[in-house]
Amino acid sequence: MTTVQEKNSVAISYIGKLDNGQVFAHVNDEEPLTVTIGNNDLPPSLEQALIGMEEGEQKKVVLGPDEGYGPRMKNLLQTIDISTFGNKFKPKVGMALSLKAEHEGKETQVPATIVEINGTHVTVDYNHPLAGHNLTYTVKIEQIL
Image (tube, rainbow, N blue to C red; front, top):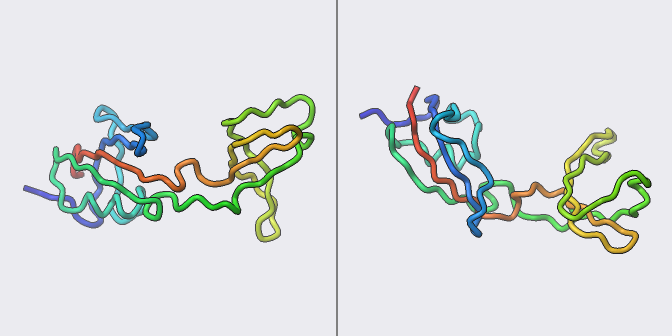
């Protein structure tokens, strides 16, 4: 039987879960995701885990933070004055924002999440929401293309 090899395009379905069971991603078998092994369409460790699998085969793959979205970095937390948001906006914990930041002399929009509101100060987190987490994928090869 044919198995997945480097440079193959494959149609996959998967469920991604955190250690607490929360689902962070789901691709069902009715609308599978097509990826090419080696193109980094998925985290590299997940792509490598697909090599050698057969059509119809299912596998559980656990990625540590370094294989997924990296560790949580404390220097990516920033406390800003609530007045920065103006009077028309009421920040709430858990709210996702797009904030301006300067990087290498250029101003860009970057995603951030409000993690704390303390009186007149708001703490925002620029880490990816999945940073610092183990990611468990249950992946199935739907078709080798």
